[in-house]
Image (spheres, rainbow, N blue to C red):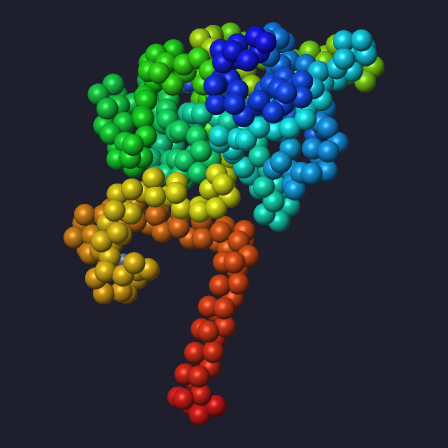
Amino acid sequence: MPLFEADSLPGWSARRVAQFAPWHARGSVPARVVRADRDRWHVLAGAEPDPRPAVIRGRLRHEALGAEDLPTVGDWVALALPDPGAGDGPAVIESVLPRDSAFRRKAAGRETVAQVVAANVDTVFLVAGLDGDFNPRRLERYVTAIWESGAQPVIVLNKADLPDRGAVPALVAEVEAVAIGVPVVALSARAGDGLEALAPHLVAGRTVALVGSSGVGKSTLVNALLGEDRQATGAVREDDSRGRHTTSHRELVPMPGGAFLLDTPGMREFALWGEGQDGGDASGGLEATFADVEEIAAACRFGDCAHEAEPGCAVRAALASGALDPARHASWLKLRRELRAFAIRHDRRLQRAERARWKTVSKTVKEHMKQKYGR
Ligand code: GDP
Ligand code: ZN
């Protein structure tokens, strides 16, 4: 069956073929979600050139533990095609294959309910503008969240036409010092200058997404990369309720060269959603982003050093000697606090531990007061 050649679907790999084997045995075909609406999906199935509408199997909805388990843009799914004889009913999504990466954000409301805005993104272009708003420190948070998702960050410094020509390498170096191990590329999307530096990240089958603050030039870059109007490239034809053809965006767009651009509204500005890919340890991304600080902290005398007043604290020593930049230290502390607050909200075990800690603390305080003041 041609669908099972790894190269017949861009991004479909030998590993996916193995994952898919049980579904193949049941007559399903592999497909990729190019758009997800509330209860309607568009999928690209096998070698079909155009996306087709799909619904999900009732069982998939009933067995979903939360919104996270439902198909989202970028997901690989097992699809049951309608019987050729049975008119053209929608295809049915039977199952979502395991995700390599997932961008989650808080669903609306106060509860920390995760919603997956994008799945199976390989590479994220974190875009910043070399203009008046340029702030390397702001990138740290994004880089951390991108590592957390399971994707690989690439920092794109856009508007490289604005600073003095000679100043750009120093700006690149400044960012490289903050984002250790992350490729940094300077270019001008508007002038079309330097785009070729992104080519190694746009190889066939790769799925890339763009994030960054508003105004940094993401749309300009998308248009430059697609080399044509996104509307035309990404159109999905669908019938509205009156049976007319309307067009709307698909959000997983094939690019010249065979890579896919994942461009869904929730993805462009995602908040820090500090959860590990397996829902477990949230600190992996933090360690990667702050490898330099973590390395210093590893030399503290106590393994659980809070880097406050402990003797033998290597972090405080590095601050005192100037080896650690106070601003970088402050960013590290801030992200640690946020990740910890997040972990506590999410983890019952940690919640219990935190409550127990407070009980002990208040008991100790009470005892102390009693000793001191006799009551
Ligand atoms: P988005 O909000 O991130 O999608 O940003 P846009 O693509 O809408 O761009 C915001 C503004 O920055 C627009 O006025 C663009 O023309 C401008 N812009 C985008 N790329 C460049 C660039 O490479 N150089 C300069 N000087 N301006 C740019
Ligand atoms: Zn310490």
